[in-house]
Length: 187
Image 1: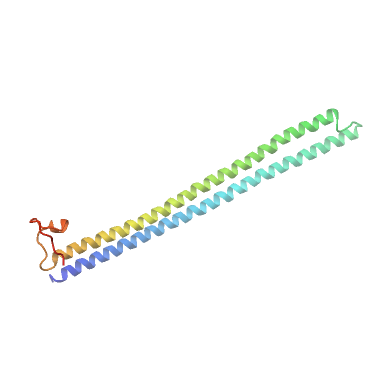
Image 2 (image 1 turned 90 degrees about the vertical axis):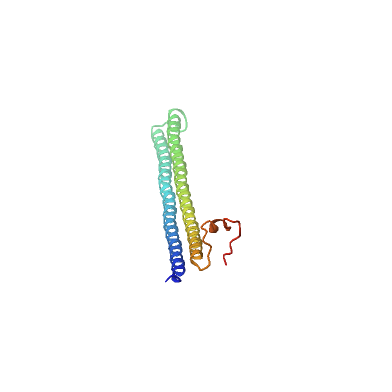
């Protein structure tokens, strides 16, 4: 039974190390799934911003269309009344319609640009989150490997203590030397 103790200790530690590696893989996989979700949210933010930006572009086109219709109406009424549509009060009305419409158009254009930039900023935040999650997954795996290595090292030390002829001084395994200063031969 005593001879089996080192084998049992090593087997238990190997199983523990394997479990730690598997747990690290599971954590890494979970972080990868979260990172993928964040990347999809980034794409969704871009698409949504583009959709909103297109609404503002459409609004700008509608403003230009109204300017053209307003000017056509002014020209038609002025011509019907026997007035020169390109001078005097008719011209002033056209300029006023153009000025008001221009302000509306440029506001819609600015809103389009702002919406696009805000969507891109949101997408960048999601991509940063994805990168952070990927890094955390990689770190979890590195940590699991390190923990497994420590577990195996401790098993080796415990197993070495149980072998016949192993040093009885507990400090010998920590420093590699006995209290008398002699080097411990682990083989």
